[in-house]
Length: 205
Image (tube, rainbow, N blue to C red; front, side, top):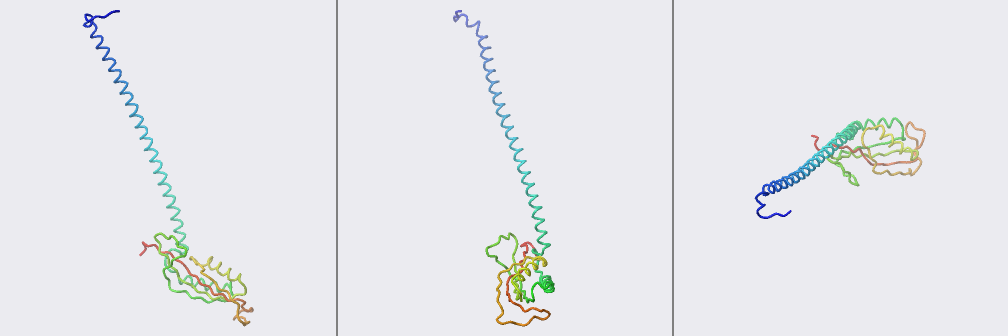
């Protein structure tokens, strides 16, 4: 079929309608693509918010569990009189009870005034101040195991955190006589130093 300029007036409206339909179709396709992209971004953002919320919830639950564990540990330290003030009277009463149990033949002790304490190696104490009440012990022994059992009983029966710094064992220069109320002569003399460590919160008055 051949067209001439004389036919153009007859078909121009058809061409115009065709061009409009192409334009509208292209716009619909472009708008559809834009809508799909926007919907995908919204869905991704929503998923990210859900994941963030779950992570925050998990972190909060973990913090609660840690706080619960910390509270139990703190209460145990307070009950064992590690956190708090110096328990000098309790320590003296506990040592006298140990004397009556005869873990060693006899012993003498001195408890020095409480002082600030810097452990070696350093101890991470957070907001707590570390103090130590130094103790010196002189003991009469039949054998070394008495010394071991004495400190074992001390830690089990007297509340607190007792640390032994060092002990020196010596044999008496000459055979002595039995101690009062005993039928055996001491074979060893021990001199030990250590002390009770206490923690005090920096926020406490």
